[in-house]
Image (cartoon, rainbow, N blue to C red; front, side, top):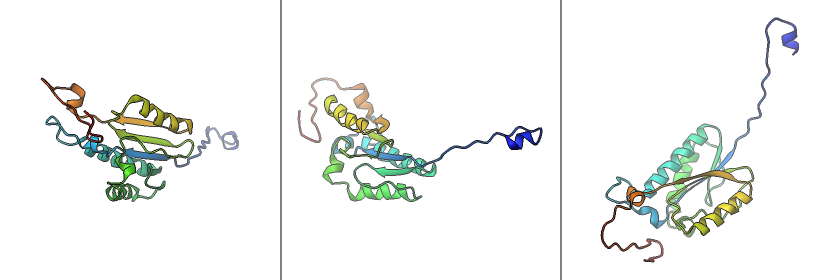
Amino acid sequence: WRRSASSDTLYVREREWEAAHTFWLWPDVSPSMAFQSHLSPVSKRDRAVVLTLAMAELLVRAGERIALLGLTVPMASRRAASRIAQSLATHEHDAAVQSSLPPPARLSRFSSALLFGDFLDPPEQIALRFNAMAEGGVGGHVVQILDPAEETLAYHGRIEFRSPESGER
């Protein structure tokens, strides 16, 4: 107000507290995500990994901290997306990564989770995992990745469906 009072020009002081936000990324790379029908040029797993790495790159460029849920610690460096890709490649066969649901992890309050997967598990299991995250004060987004054959169920005649993870019919 002092600057405005001493001249005919009106000045407005804007102050905004800018702090980096923590985003927890998780791509479903379980065996069920390897599914690829004749209707799709890429597997669901490849889509999930590409979307995860693209979001990681965008978030780091925006100045946010990112981490891979259950595998890495939050980081804000320019090389964070490549570190996430490297971590996914080195832990590809770990039990935690092979699960079709995000690992149960205690996340920092007010952080966000970005989850990429098909989420075709029983709804009770999905709700249980999401509720655990929400009770900890974590917000987020869920991106469901489906193959075109799963969206339309374009199957005719007698079809036997088998779970790639458990072998159930």
